Image 1 (spheres, helix red, strand yellow):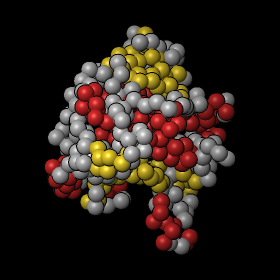
Image 2: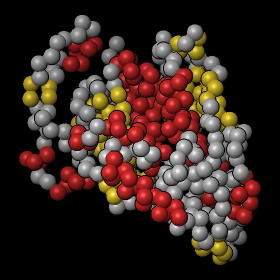
Image 3: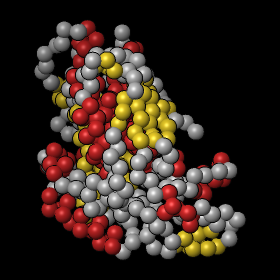
Image 4: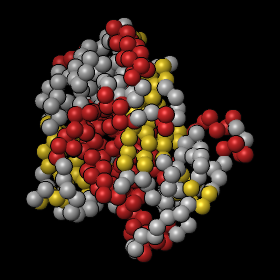
Length: 372
C-alpha cells in the first residue's frame, strides 16, 4: 500500500479506525514557520465526528500531539511526527460483520487483495484515517500563509439541493456559520433538513464540495505527467467516498464553443518584486477577465483563482437491511449497527482544503527548487 503523499513536502500516514491511534510524519516542512497549535486543532475539530446532529455520534476529542520537528513555537525543518489517539471505539458494533461484505464498501476488495481485513469500521479503509491528512494539510496551510495563498472549501450541493456554481456570488467565510458548511444560509437549511430526513430513514445521501484557491502564483505544475490539475484530482480522488473531480467549468464547458469559453489575456500593470526569481516568474503578468480554465492552463497555474468541485457518494453503510454475501460467497443479509454519517460531505470540507494545501505547497517548493 502506498502511504506516502508528496515529493518535497511529504506526509506518511499510519493507523486504523479501531486501532490505538492514527498519525503520521510530515517531512519537507520549511523551517521557521510559526506553529499555531490552536489552528491545527481547529482543522481537526472541523473534521471530527459528533460535531453536530447531522454527523456520526462517535465521540472523539481528536486531540493531536506533535512529537518532533518543533522548537520554541517554530518548525525546525526536520520531520514532524504526530499522533491522535482513538478513545471511543465501539468495536462490538461490528461483530455481526466479521463474516460479511458490506455493499459498496472496501471489505470485498481489501479481502481479495490482501487475504485479510479489519472488519471493525473498515480498518485502514475507514475515513477516520483522514485525520492525518488534516494535520498535514494544517501544517501546509501555515506554510502558505506568509505567501498569501488561501484555500476555502464549502458544501455546494447535497442530493438535489444546490447553490449557484459561481463562487463569487457568495461570502465563502459564511460557510462556517452553519453545520452543513454552505455559504447560502437558506439552502443550508434545506440541505440540513434533507440530511435529517434521510438519516431518519436509515439511509444516506451524497453531495459536492467546491474549493477555491486564491493567491496562487503563476508557474506551479509539472508537465507532462504531473500537471497541477492532475495532482489536485489525484489528491481529491484519494479521499474516502469521492467519486468525481472537475476543475474550472468542468463538464459544462463541452456545451460551449471556444469563442465563448477562451480566457482572453489582457495586460496587467504590476510592481516588480526585488527578488530575481519573482521577477522572472511575473515578468509577463497578465489578467483574464474570465476564468473558465479554473486558474490552470497547460497543467500550470496562471495566477487566477483555482477552483474545483469534488463529488462525494452516499455513505456505503446503511442502517437498514441489505442483501450481500459472506466470506464463502453465500447469499445473506447484512443489518449494520453502530454510528455512521448520513452525509459525509460537511465533514469532508476541511479534508478537501487540506489535501489542496499539501498539493500547492509541494508544488511551490518544487518550483522554488528548479528555479534557484
